[in-house]
Length: 356
Ligand SMILES: *Cc1c(COP(=O)(O)O)cnc(C)c1O
Image 1 (tube, helix red, strand yellow):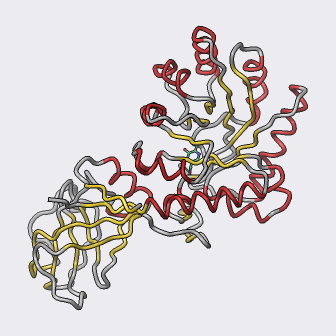
Image 2: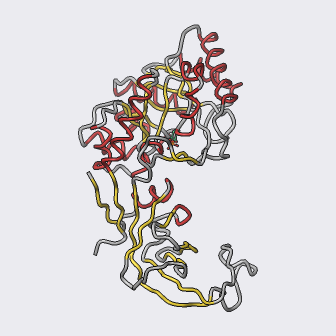
Image 3: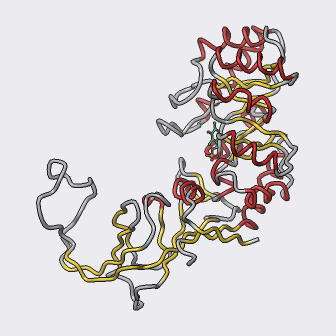
């Protein structure tokens, strides 16, 4: 039994990483490859090493520890604001951490001193997305306090957009970040190496000469893994797209009324999905579920397949419009988005098939 199966085009991910590195190198921008999308899988990780990536970032310290154990000696950046309870693991395994809290920075400094390590810090500034970050008004205070700490070096500032509120990185907010960095440099009396301006969605801003010159670092995940930019809803030119494909097996195939029958729970709203009464429809149930994928991120390869919904272990599709004859036991293939990839890579029930 192999299904559900995830085909992972490691070769195409390697090509994407190489391409992006070359592009950013030519603009003097350091690429930090964000590898949090594949649950610490060392087969996928090796593609980044073959591509010559020298700086990686992950949001889970367990993944970084795994990469270190597998022999990775390049730069590792802690992407998620550290938990106070994981400081020792962080100090032992990473070179750089993003921070927003004085308490956490102080814990890193203390632990680094005890363990005789040096850790670089980048302060994240919230310029609108309202996920992590200090507000601009509070930046100077935190920066000056970090400057006074032992065994940590303030390397620069960064921001993240598009993740909580879905705020798009644009000329306006990126220029604001550049200004904030310059003001901070004046206050602390030295230049900062790093302006870490964002993620995949920030890439398109590099067409602007001034921005490309001021941005010194980008933390990029999705562009390499999937060749897509979900925030700007685009396929990135010249990249390999959808390098993860899901295959799942049909376990039930029947004509059924599309309209449910009986009293609907949750105040008549049911599970919240929109159900249209289209009369009798041909339905295929596939053996894959919420435990393995995010069904909102499935794009069927076969024309006519429509994803209707999903429970923990069953994916419900409408295949009435499919021309070819389907049978129980047939396998359907889907391109998948970032969130479905993340879950499929994390699920132990999904067989990984690496294409090298
Ligand atoms: C996930 C993440 C990234 C990478 O985002 P992509 O859209 O995958 O390029 C960058 N920075 C931070 C802080 C993140 O959490």
